[in-house]
Length: 113
Image (cartoon, rainbow, N blue to C red; front, side, top):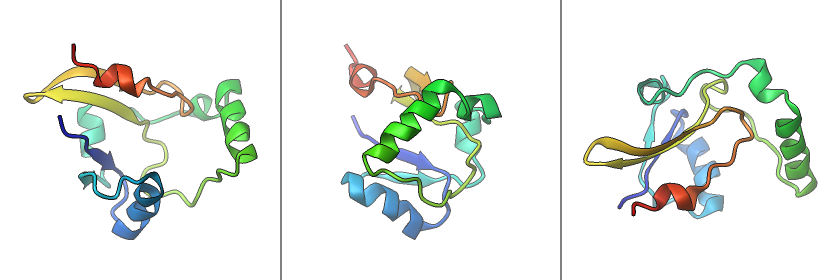
């Protein structure tokens, strides 16, 4: 099984600023500034309710209190994220964010049993 990331930035230096602090610099990644892969995987554009809701605001305030600040956005900030487990070109498991604050259970998604 191979982990890979698709991101919306076309600037490798900006991508490095995200991946390096998380010790993910060696993980394969694909720049998709036009969002074609996002669209192909059914990842929609967010509307204001997916940003401005009690859960997302509480998560943002909690992150700020821990010293985590948002940097300048890169790419399409309205494109919602998702996580997918692919096997032989088929989606085995998927998590498409409903809110920007959603936190998928990555271990459950990675479990292929």
